[in-house]
Length: 341
Image 1 (cartoon, rainbow, N blue to C red):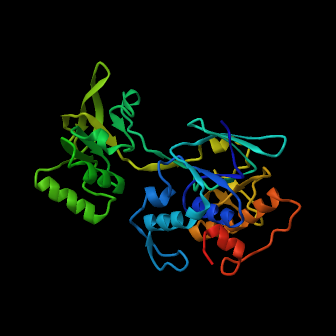
Image 2: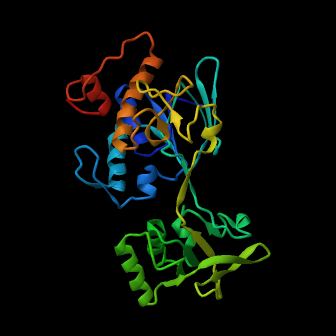
């Protein structure tokens, strides 16, 4: 069944989340779609624990703290999230509405689309070894959707960033065995996580090896072991049940490139009054857009989201004047925010 709403937001990073807030203040309902399994975009996936210093009124916050605060801020507006799926199709109809379909088969009808996809949807960096594809989500995993799936398994985890360490340290206690493999002793993770891993290795509760997985050994379609090439070019075979791959995420523009939008080096040109694209009714905010003087800052994306919301309000109600009201004094704003007088 097709879901009807006012606006569909593509991208649940900080700018997409703040876009919910700005639309909500104007009484505009929305659904938000993101390819990642949780809201937050780059902040949640790439640097959840790293400090951010340039958010107004917050001298310092972590990426995840910013996401948590934004989620609390948009809570009164009841936006519906469609996560772990990409927008596969956007069609503008003769009546100026849009038909939107996702990779999961979700179908929506809306009056405006806002692209807040950062630099694109983030896709896991793949393990480039022959024979990987048939085993994905069976014995080879790029994401942990259900931690219990790896309980009592012999797990090998590849990677040296925060996500790799976070999952290794969370899963090791319930796995039969946990072995981390990275190409070097140089990690991109928080020092406290690296220290914790080394302590567990020293205590015999986890294993660590420097090297690269260069081959898979299967029997009747079941992964039995992996071949690990060490720095000295020697090869060691390790048995396993599950292989977790955390090589990081890479941005891809994906299906957006096929929507008929003007593009400049994988960015979407917009005006600076409405932040509308060359297709009326489709807007772009945040790092994915471009215009003279553009600065890729979160606070710039917040400003763009506010003006895009006012433009959409005028599009939805062309015969009405859009009045600027202030959250400090407006009873309507207070009602939408759930503030009791």
